[in-house]
View 1: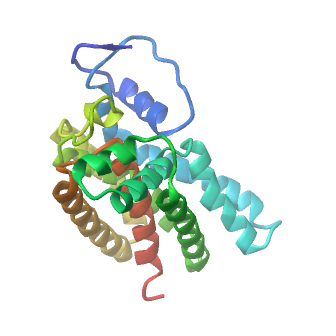
View 2: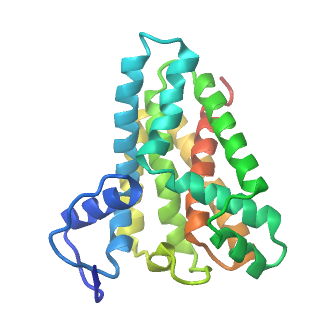
Length: 253
């Protein structure tokens, strides 16, 4: 239940971030204010890192017993399952809307449709294939790069919500965050993102720079095409950012 705008505690913000980004339904002891999700975005990269850490734990359990190409499926599938397919669903809608719609209203209408079209199905198939190949191509220990990919993909949502207004048809969750992120959230989320960046040294900052440029270009395209962002676009941005991080990590190796 939502109440009028107000402040929440750090624990409330962390729990709301977990509730939104994962299938875990942590109990809430009180009614949350309307800006609860926006404030919770400060913890989005941290939740991404936790998802990555749990996934890596399972991966290291599977790795000794299975071939590398089988064990890599854990890195591919577990984050999707933990998030309830939230971002993959957004990516499918993005593909349907951007490739199937010509005008702004057509694109938004198609993305809001719960059914998956040909472009969405094809996009998800290619997304999964590209991710899998990149995960196999990661050199040496995959741990640090994977954690960065998980954190950066959630950071992309914070950055786009900070820089772009809401562009949907109304009623979406992103209406509560797009254009409503404060400096507290963007700087806090960036600090959480820097933790896995530092683990990779100079390569981490190279990946971060390339990822930030990609997100800004993506935001420019969203703004030009639709005038802002929707929940589907935030989910799609997460998936594409994860791919970019992995791609930059394997480049030059």
